Length: 261
Image (cartoon, rainbow, N blue to C red):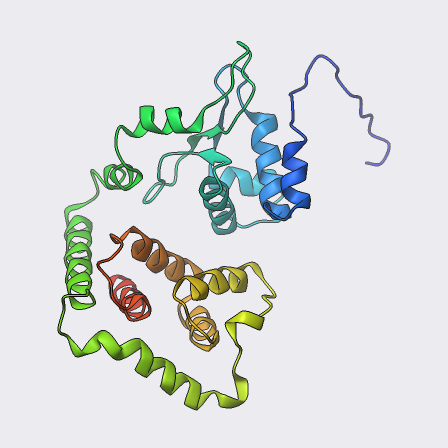
């Protein structure tokens, strides 16, 4: 294997901007995200600036060093950081096209993600996710409708105008958690994640304005990261100003996700 010939083909190359390396060095991109982005860049069509991929296929491309679910998370991170754009893949398992930001096209132009996303979705990203659920079996559709109904009820329950006593639930939960874990308190401000999962939990804890990581780490062990991320994305899609207590609402979303399973 070590003696296999390897030659550089000067007739087959792509323009790879040094700014991607800068993003890695400056900490904007994690190495895993950097690797996937470079791979997408190399495999994109120079005429369209698109890469045709699937999560399972990318996992195989990386010799299964990254699981399909981990590739999914990396792709969503790249999308959130506006390095790529693709239609929401909720409920899908097939391959899809990925637009790459500022990819140099063969006609001399560059990919504009904002224009591409508007052309493809025609409306908000949440709308494209709704479209991906079309055609699912009736029983699945009924469950999804129930979840949306439960979610709407939760928004009302934890809104500023609600008089429900649950408005204090996060504080009470935190107090109980702190009392039960005084010897193992892990302040958010000094917490050092040891894995991708813990890093994501730290991001969510900061968003929820938690002071201790105990609840998030307990939720990670109990529910797993995909369920936590699902609740987090639903929370972020809730109109700002409608939720008085983000932590309590997040806890409730986790419970709903469990009931749907």
